[in-house]
Amino acid sequence: FGRLLILPDPNAATAAAARLIAQTIRNDARAVLGLATGRTMEGVYARLAAMHRDEALSFSGVTTFNLDEYVGLSASDPNSYHHYMRTHLFDPVDADPARVHLPDGAAADPGAECAAYERAIRAAGGIALQLLGIGDTGHIGFNEPPSAFDTRTRVVELDEATRRQNAPMFGGDPEAVPREAITMGVGTILESKRLLLLATGPAKAAILAAALEGPVTPEVSASAIRLHPDVTVVLDTDAAAAL
Ligand code: GLP
Image 1 (cartoon, helix red, strand yellow):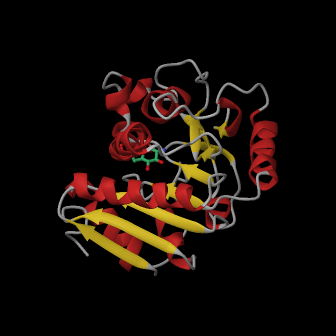
Image 2: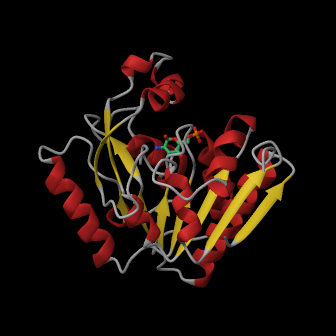
């Protein structure tokens, strides 16, 4: 696949990812970005917030689409990805609320919400750069295995491993983590013009080796990125240890 950048530590890796995103915005003030959540991304958003503050990086014309949201959590729920994004990025960079999009986990009709999300991405002209993390199950977004490579935005059931991975944000109790999420599909993700996968830390080493060097298979959703013509993978040395 495309480019693989291995940097000495998580700070350097998140900084490199933030620079790529900032470059995209500087090249096109009306860029459409695909965004991700998770602990790994907090460092990226902190850098972008600093660039907004210190280097006049403007988000006022930028449109964003997040990958996913938990089903059953409203935008105001402190554990929702809506809340995460406001806290870590949208408020600090003064994003235009009319241009930021996440699936509505509290939608009365989740199926209609998923279809509307796909239409909104298309209406915006598609995603120029999609930021991706990777879950312990190999998921991108919340595409738990197996996720066919042509899947679209839909409701998925979260794996037990994912609920354990994300339990720290829910007071440590996996049972407190919602059972379902709305996620962009693998097919939706693959339609972005560019993909940027960021992962740090030793816990991600094994799944990254599977995703980047094992078979390209719906059993490891992240392996799908190897089918994309313009992919950048940014890792720290710990995450890259099994490559
Ligand atoms: C959640 C998100 C994923 C993200 C993953 C990684 O599961 N839905 O998009 O890749 O977290 O989380 P972390 O960065 O906390 O390891």
